[in-house]
Length: 183
Image 1 (tube, rainbow, N blue to C red):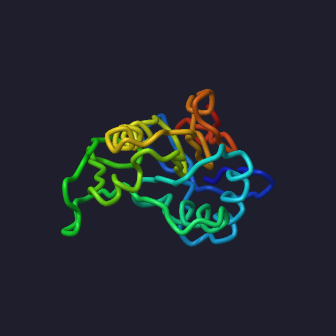
Image 2 (cartoon, rainbow, N blue to C red):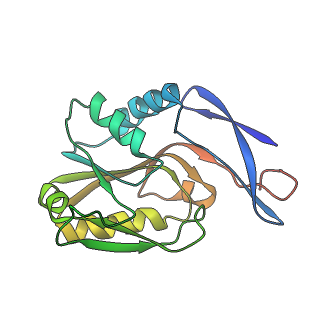
């Protein structure tokens, strides 16, 4: 089963995947879709507040962060990593449980990234906001690093997340029952 979505004038067919016997989600994957990545980056930037730096979580929204930075004329963006790398010192962290990931994950920033965030206007971006847990974890590490969050954006908001007033999105991604009907 598929769901056709219109994202700011561009359509995509998203495959449905079961989360439980009576709940399915539509998978929106930016990886490998250059056209939708460029399009959504442009449309989000049109709605973005003034910012100094983009921060996102590893991994699905990395192409979006990159393309938004390119289109904004920036040479920098930061990725909150899902694992500590050998080059990361004085690590800050926040835990997250995402609807699309089986286990609790932790996001990490090293001192170098935290120093680049400190005192700057931060735009947090993501591909899809569902429960808001990934967003909360990014907010936590940006605050720990001393950044000033000026905006939180995503391509899509799933289910009730669409009604949040603290995020900016391009379209609503509905949830589906076990038979593929929109809830």
